[in-house]
Length: 452
Ligand code: TRP
Image (tube, rainbow, N blue to C red; front, side, top):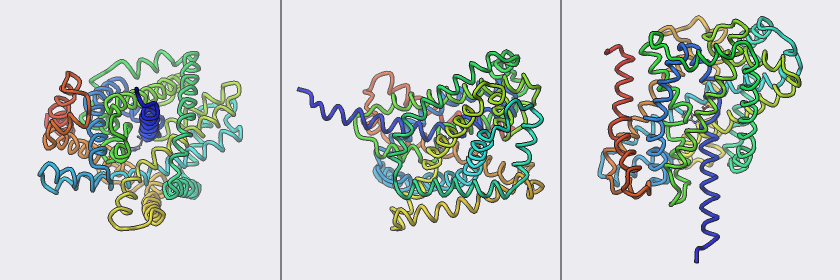
């Protein structure tokens, strides 16, 4: 007879993993970053490269990262060290873990500032100032926010304190329960926004912009950005999924869970784009306006909608929740490492990590105003950190994970750990992880360098 308890336990832990991983994947990357990068990089061709990166690099690397986590069962740095030992490989692999810890830390520093903007917009939406407004007024509200470091400072601090409290109390279990209900609501509201966009004049143009590739507009750097965004949005390449994988019980299908998370993440990003670009074109705005895109388009749509004040508020609350479930994933590898290797209590580890991120985040706050003039390679502080992490560190981390899982780990181990059997599914993964993913990342790096 089958043991009912066992089946139940497996089902619930699989759900817990999927919730945690989707919570990490779905965040500002989907709703804020994907639309604005698509706008800056000319639309369709960028989206196509992004989708190819999700399928060809993202899914196999997500499976590999989860698998390494489940096999190593420690923080990413220690996992890499243990698994390298097991395979008789060099200890240098632990630097891949280090790279990830650092990347998560750097990303959270600016992520928190943008999450702060979303919290400010909860209040702004609620105050009703956007009711029946026009594009110019909405732009003015955003640019005055950008120009005021004080208010950004306050909400960046609030967000960071919230993140670190959750991480130090370890109440992420409660948050996962929240994720279970809030994500579907976010999803439903996005559908609602897309339906609303369908009624606007800009719908056809918006859809054409997103889905009609014009490769003439695609530079080497755009291709690199598309790859970086695939890693960023899926939350890959820095050990976040590795940490979650380390809590994953045996006999859960990593392949199925990864496919589900990647599909949900991609769908949310595409829906966000389909909601926003029609508003852009209907109001004759610039798709390439940059990091302020959602803050200068969504209020317009909500302002014209019946019940928009309330809907708009709820929507920004949901963005906040999506952001916080991602931010705890970003900092978890650093906190776990401090707790495991430096013997710090979880609270102390969270405090120091949070303080560091908060300080560094001030650079981003000021990069939009007082320090906007300080640039390097044409990028301000925020853009530099973003470029360094999304476009370089995450793909490099992903490359290391692919090489390790495909070439260092023996096929006996990976086959046993993935539990797909030796059939076509496993062979397909192995081909992707050994050849497609490493060559894909390297080709895109070379293309961005202008090698061809
Ligand atoms: N994926 C999240 C988003 O789209 C951000 C995030 C969470 C992330 N964990 C990560 C990005 C790990 C890179 C690496 O908002």
